Image (cartoon, rainbow, N blue to C red; front, side):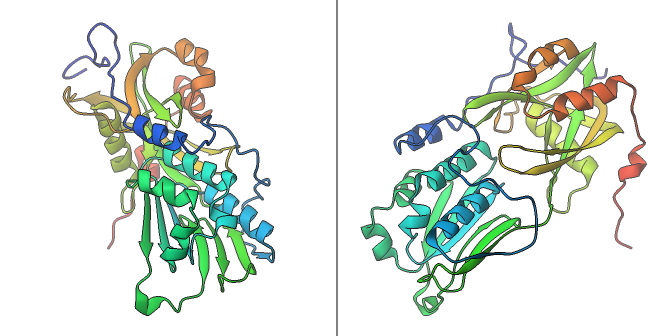
Length: 328
């Protein structure tokens, strides 16, 4: 192994710590009397299966349930356009809890709101507005320019995966769609040294979970570049991919989100001891297969053990099977 021996850095503990940057966010949200536990939303109607078929909405209850389901699909950005953040939709405990889970549970979460009548919104004492005032880094409310106030539509969009749309905000008639299967494209690194696997410990919402160094592939980024970047950001090691272990899909039973994971194995070197780890990582660990199995309830997804099982079984594929095709 070139360079320093690969051990997680924190003298005497074998753990590298990072202060939780979201503690203040959780404290700010607690004043809204929302539930703190990270768990499935019990007040929602069950999410329908992924489909690009439109559902027709005619009542306030239908719009409210559809909006909650759309917001629950959010991964990075929820966009809202509303006349005054209608209280029957956006000032409801179920919706506010969804926004709380989104802010606490997703990396780089953002909620952007555009309103047409801010005076009425403020006079309603809307709890969503109060939340936005405390969490300005995550919730952003802007006022529609005067020359565009003739716009009458209202909508809530979660990334590019779900939408509720009404042509006229003064009516409840509209449509909703939870769009066709669009999994989150992710990469992960299976890194072994002396029968230990490098895992990261992450704070997701109010819970600490274990995962391989892993994350989303950014727009325009190759799979190999993405996995090298994620390992560097989350562990401070340089990762050199050597083989593809496998391709995995998993559907989160809590919210219906699907993940498509490309897992790679390789070597590491060039450890940056002074580099801050990328939130929400709070520590890194070298754990044996048995130690990981003993933490099964704390694994972020079942894919963590599936990848390790395939790796230990000797499953490898050449990197050429995921080669990026360059423009001619």
